[in-house]
Image 1 (cartoon, rainbow, N blue to C red):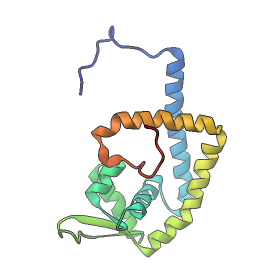
Image 2: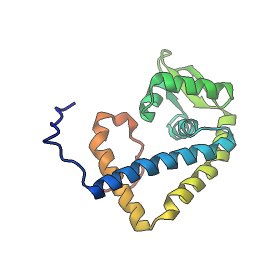
Image 3: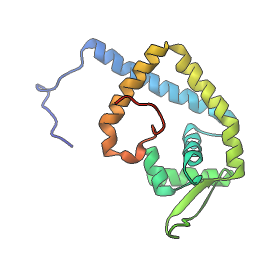
Length: 171
């Protein structure tokens, strides 16, 4: 971590920047909470849904637990606990890695695939209703550009978290 500037050297946010920052924090928290609440009708949390999406998008339909935790920016113990809960619900299964027999991989069960297909329309409808359809296409593209710039700046420290593959990104 770089040396932090002293209070005298700090470039403080002006009122407009502070208002935008606080709007981002509040809006993001409220959006994620609402999306989480809406998935509860399917017996899922947003974290569980995101795990299912990651597993469904992986090449083999399964991922090593360590890679899954890294990609989600969650601690390994948190992901292990969540996967254990999902395994008890019959949504995922864990097994030893077919590659080397040492690592543990998680994969969706048939019931997991069915629950994901059932919950996906709720999630997409929520994303659309609580974000996409509230703003103009130009504003949404601006949000995407801003957050891509942030991600581009920070992803080097955590390349395992990259989920934008396949998306058109501006250089």
